[in-house]
Image 1 (cartoon, rainbow, N blue to C red):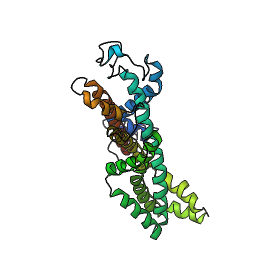
Image 2 (cartoon, rainbow, N blue to C red; image 1 turned 60 degrees about the horizontal axis):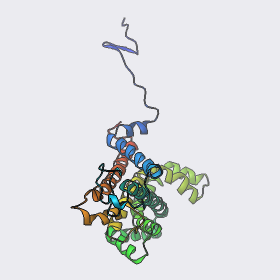
Image 3 (cartoon, rainbow, N blue to C red; image 1 turned 180 degrees about the vertical axis):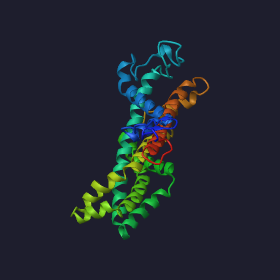
Image 4 (cartoon, rainbow, N blue to C red; image 1 turned 60 degrees about the vertical axis):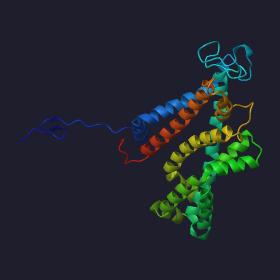
Length: 298
């Protein structure tokens, strides 16, 4: 009679692995680029939030004796600009502006896109088709030209630029949400909610939208990256955040005339933009894979 039990085999005891308590987080942590991106984002947010109070120089303080000081070559760690202003202080304050634009634009774009997409997907018919045709019509315009047109017609300020960026980013969210809602409203739990007497508003925003959260969350991370990049475009072309308020985009615009004599003035904000945008894109990829149970990262 065999002595092999359910826990043994011909080759020794069978080793069972305990499933992770938080499988979504476990899949995300296996995405190395996404984890690196999340760490960089946390570092940038903390640095821009706390850094200006630690740096010994103010962003507007002029040091005419150290104009165009190169990084690590004097009292200013990352050097100074044409007016002797500390580059580290300006980068951190500019980061506050650029990151704020990205995050606030994301919140506004999500709010508009989710509401439009949910209404269009749930009700369908003529009203839903009309909403999505408006979305398609706006999507036909190249984003950067639409953004520049709106920025040229409105007096540039932090709030107006943020609103303009949000109004050019909600259409993708609306389309993603509409597709998810159309599929989910045919599910059994929706029919059960209808039979239970739930109102349409409750069904849409308490039942359907939470179940469509995965692609919406992914879109949110990408909108932040897009908002930072679009703010840089517009500010670089002179239609965005106006000096003396610093953003990474207008720092690049001011630095272009000193590319040969003081290249660090352009390199430093360019590196910050690249790090922020790439990190949010990596996080978006990681979140997408983590929220997909069929992901090969599991």
